[in-house]
Image (cartoon, rainbow, N blue to C red):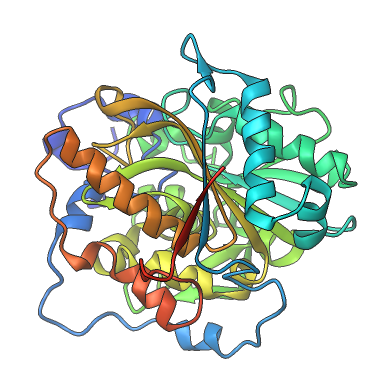
Length: 402
């Protein structure tokens, strides 16, 4: 058993570390410096906020596809009680829900919606959330509907990539070449789970002979989210985060390959906050995230999305609420999972999260949870509105039911 100063989770959890990593997907969420709910709940310390390079991102001119997209402040809510049948998604119902949602969002049919957001030469990345595979991960049937829509409108499967930060988590959640023939399946990085769990001294599964992470070449050294927060130097941290230091590099998949992105998060909480559209991208597009949780927990969800690699490419978010989870998130918690039979659609991920946060608060209250409604849990949404990335003011957000 290796020893070191870096621990991926506190002793207080008292669960098997390897089982936790596999079952909860806490590694893929990038939440490795302790209980993510604790970081989300802690009061900001009486000291200056950590500096970041957000100003560099804001200086880059926007494009016609930049966030918040063509429908700022518009969120579509689609519910069908038949979406889950015998505790399994019904593919036909889910596809029909997707088509209803995309029509309601754009005001046109499926082809017109496609033409508004994409062109046939695009390379489209579908960002899923594989945390908690089979329990609260992005459902395959939702991704199926998206792939069918793209293919029907002229995007060949070889120009579609289903992606997340960790390759092993995609496999665990069922996103495989066998399940999606012809579609790319790409994790931004690999990780040695045995080494991450502290069970093995053998680093050959992730460490090259020159001392660099085998996935280092998957990240763009010229495009990074810089924050004045140092990361631990331990090998366990490097295994899970690729780099330490003060730079979180964007995946080359985003900076060099993809021309458009569809974001497909799931409907779940993070303490009194949520872990949905903005967090799925904020902590999924970059490496070296563990260092960011305590000092910049929610701000990452805004600032990473301000960079052109996300801001100018993420044209659609579809929140998978076939199931919801109202407590224990972002890790899976079977006791708090419930049937919701809902999909949400937006080009504006901040309006989407504003709507979903409000729904989550009411759900948590209805289940008898003592909810803290302090503005700090939604300040990152208002921050996004101030810098022009989206709409968070409830008076300006319009919810359409389809």
